[in-house]
Image (cartoon, rainbow, N blue to C red; front, side, top):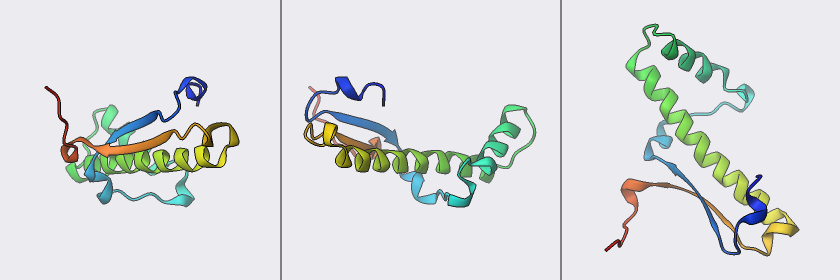
Length: 102
């Protein structure tokens, strides 16, 4: 949010996510994501964590990126200050993007 004042009209804010976000799940009752943080803490401390728990952490992190991009876009659209600048907040999976770079 700190950089929004300097984003050019028709600018883009892009979060690089992954299609793995489809496997993620967010529980609105667990807004601080304590279950994900607990798994990440176990990973950080070298405790054995299952491969599926690591995947679940990754999927939830990617889903969080998609959700935050969507929320940012909604807030930009609702803000008189930024709606006229037509800034886009996006998330993408780079494997699905075709770039024409010479």
